[in-house]
Image (cartoon, rainbow, N blue to C red; front, side, top):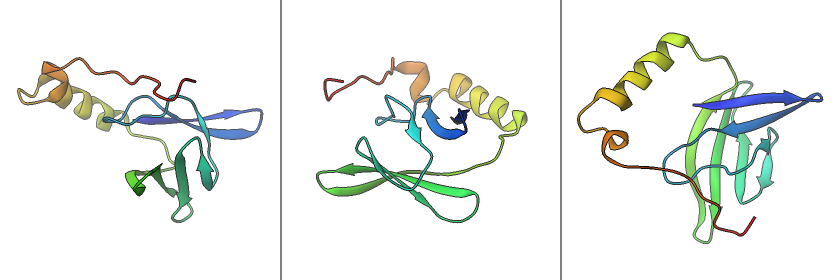
Length: 101
């Protein structure tokens, strides 16, 4: 799950944690490279977020600029918390800064 926050008329992408690579600060919701990440608009509602690493761009995820249904959040939360093989049941996970910010 991620959030799109509007502040003083500008939209920002705020990632609350995704896999092994996560944003450690908000990105302005606009096309281009920012802080080692690349945002690309696919169409009127879809965006593609990639990590711009030494080996080139690495796809992180595709997201839509629309509200999420609460039923989807409930189902996903239950799955990661209750499923026996869920990584989140057996591992402590966090994102840290690795570039000295």
